Image (cartoon, rainbow, N blue to C red; front, top):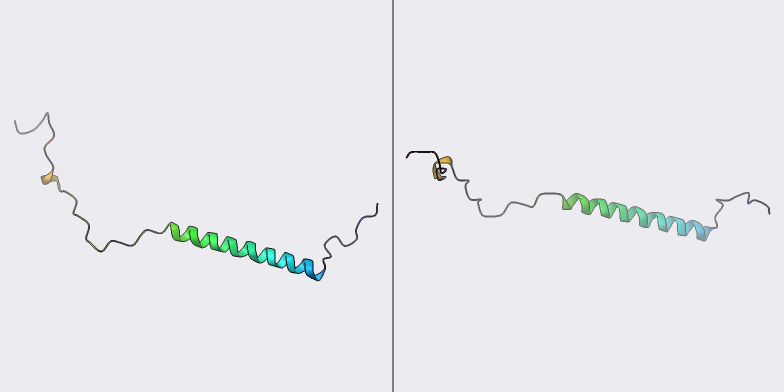
Length: 68
């Protein structure tokens, strides 16, 4: 059995197929990266203002020790 001398020698049609496959893979990876990047961004703030956090004065005193 003789070994092929030009294992990577491709016809014009085969070269086109390889190029199309490479472009498809590249486009898929760029699209996935774009979606992953934008899925991890925080959502924009709501139009209403957030409710203020309760201060220490608003909290009830803990049971078991206090002003008794």
